[in-house]
Length: 410
Ligand code: NIG
Ligand code: FE
Image (cartoon, rainbow, N blue to C red; front, side):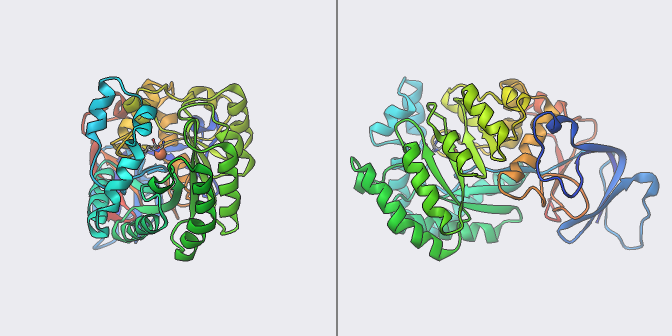
């Protein structure tokens, strides 16, 4: 397949580039005007100027009619396997209850865990597929999905099996993370230390034996798990070759950034609360600073200091955090817009955060998140006349003319 008459290709990088840090998020990706992209199977095999395009007989041609092309979004943090929904808590929040108060009353994550327990794998798969399709229809070509609504060994394994089936069922690339320490499970309420021991002694070996999860995550935050507990779980997971992606600093300066960077975590996520010390640590490390402005928006939390993190040379990614409690949307275009409007990122910079750096936060920075020969053929053909700056500006206006996800046109 050839996509021809592309007004401008955005997000071109050399094959060895797996992420872009600081100012390079803006200046790193190149563009070509009046261009074509050739796709073979699930990969891009060539890009170039239309003047050098040679059409072979019987080739499938897609005419972009002057529209730009951008890489598909890489959403490195989602919780899309869940049962039911939590609009009751949404109404409670409007009436003044905080996220922590809802959690203390047994709502929040435990509410989702109760629902998941009573839902079959098939139903969980169908609802997760529905959400994955919504994400892909909105331009996502790779995403991560976490467990964390099981909170006992059997239900965490049930979530993993659903995640594995989801990964098989979609064109997008899917990475899977074990988040047993998302909250203390019902049976252990009031016995957090025992729960952490159980995660380490029982859940982790069982999860590792399934061979489905690549990463481990812990909700390291005020009212949830401590930095010490987080470090213990990360260390134990390392014995099973599972790297860490950590929830940190959503509700307070939790110490999670310190634990994540010291452990060489792939990413530290949320980061609504960042002090100068945390920014400096992220800037010095290869841990991707993943910010989730959809959660700030929906939960009325401060927006992360992405501008400062970029100015200090961190690797910044943006992700949706799609989940039933704090961010019930996986629309990366909205995330992109929030990155610009509330975090001070320029549209092209925020695009790098939503694509290549999101890929890096899933260790896919060499395979997706950019447009170059050898990478996944996952990109968005934008309607003619719409620029990169216009997309997050007119943030509810349809902008996708066509999508290609790993070579499949939609
Ligand atoms: O990333 N912060 C922790 N976990 C999710 C929320 C999960 C939920 O409320 O169901 C998050 O925001
Ligand atoms: Fe999350």
